[in-house]
Length: 416
Image (cartoon, rainbow, N blue to C red; front, top):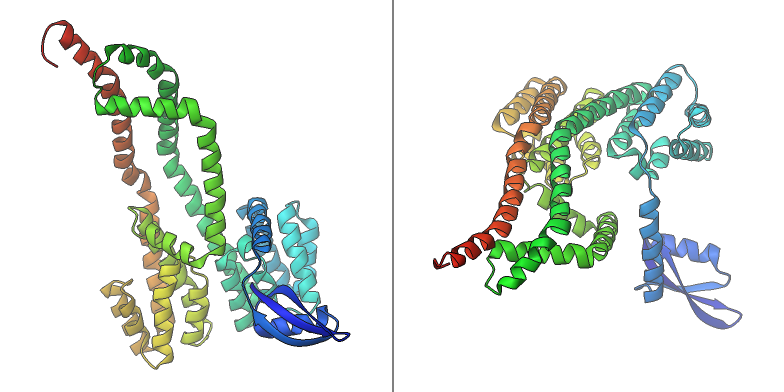
């Protein structure tokens, strides 16, 4: 939202009034209906500091209160909506019926509001966009597909299947992460106990030595001082950092872009994001092409549901290439995201007029690659986990025993 200042003339006097709007055109419209008098001019400006602080506080707490829909509830609601739509029941009545039947308060609010919007003349996709956070990009893309093809029931069935597949992958991911997570939590607790209660016992001995302590011991003593003196402050700082980080991700596109760039360079995470994105992109795109949607329009819809901004930016060049008269496979090749085998398959599909069938095979390939990454996740994490545990054990051992060895050497008359 942008901040505008409207100059109003009323009863022979001029005054300025600040307000927010999406664009200058909307600002003119809002000023006319909100304020009595003649609107002389509208200028875009920077919000006052107190107003910026107020909005920051509001959005900060709204982010904390925001709740995503439970995946099980969302899948069940979409399947119900698909069945009722297929039976000839109107979208409005179906949404209202499901909203009244569900026990999920968030889902009840979302579906109830969407039913009211449709009753007021809005399309389902326009109403769904209000709940981008709750529904997700994939749901929005498939609802849009249903409207474009005129077969909402089939699009909703397909959406439910895709969300079910995503849910299965999340469950597999959690199972793969369960053992490493539990080991790391146990090690973190043990390390904290040692730092908080065991290291202080040795601290008094080290202070009596009046000798230069080795670096591992200095690190341990620093951590002990930090935990026991500023522990609560550290926890508060971490909490504030998480809240501010979430706010920056939600409201600053440049910050979100740089964060997504960092994730795409991070070991293991980059492959998960890459293949999950390409799998969903090819899935939605293949469904759109199969439904007879023009390639440029299908690309626009499929790209819109991508969460990773750097990947979205690269794929947007494909649409530009196609709109300028270029081929799809050339556009995809220029992104550098697709393997040569995939480019050849798409080129063959374009030449033979069977692009939809070939895109289906491409989607299955990326789905297979993504499943393989999830299945091998536990093995891939083990080396990292072992390295972290080894570092913690070595730090504790050297930090405590090195001064002891030095003291023993001094007692025996050997140089330290």
